[in-house]
Image (tube, rainbow over all chains, first blue to last red; front, side):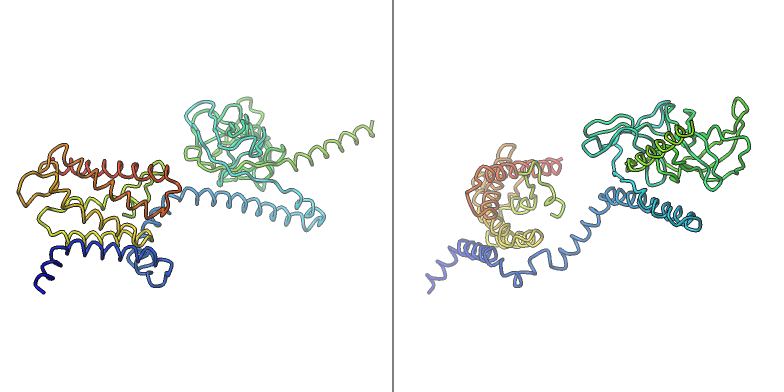
Length: 284
Length: 146
């Protein structure tokens, strides 16, 4: 008996080793029987809590994606709101126009800004979508908060945008609810402000009025927010007004944008022009 | 643990620094104690990544071999040796750590894969993870040494 105890003591390490390894292998093989081993899994309370904390941290870093989706959603909702508003305005006069407005759908491509500047005279923005994604020249670009610019160069996977903050940029705009038109240009100074030029002398508007896209070109649908009028001057030649507009888009902090494919509207404009031409010809 | 399990460098290197706890066990602690501690740490590590048995098995193996390995690398009869660069030397300690890590990851990935079918990937996993963990363990040892 003493010999046995002595022997066991001698090999106790080996015994324990074999025992523990056997237990490990049993766990490994018995893992299929999940109910019995749930306590040594991520389902137990301690691990669950830890993973919750980790996922909380991860969620923080994925806020970028969440933000992107929200921007997209915002643009979509704004679009719907505009359509509904327009439909309501016309519904009293002409119910057929609602059907026409329903056709004025445009496609929206979400994109990410990969390079951007606000401190140059002619700023350009690069986005991560190109011709492969359906982007074409002269498409409008908006952010969740307002107009950004117009697509200028299209590569296969990237595109260059001329933003409002560029001397080349000139976007046809109007003053919301007042209907006066002008062109939005930038003077190269402050990235926060642009100028609405060539507003007619007879126009009545006031500080705080919203400037929106006119929809006169096929680039932007009508009614997208551009900014807010801060103050007004006479133009250099004295023939029109020039309003300083606080841009609603924060160009310095631009991450997610949406490119607008307005090709349907383009088609409609073409038809409209064709109709005008043929009318003019018959008048001759 | 939650942090390191998310790191999977180059798709092959998994730094599992908890092995260090067993590797650095002092010489005077009984082998059976080291083994029990190793098994328990392994179990906790397993429970976090839903692989019961894998880390506990590998870590028990390391715990079983740690003491004889330590004896091999320390010539002195001093019983109170705690594995470190200062106690063991600039070459001995890194080598000691490397061998134990290699054993750990060999068992770990063999049990994870349970097959030799993807042997190239298996070898990369073992070597990559051993190397990365080795660097981290040595970095820790150097910082502690100062």
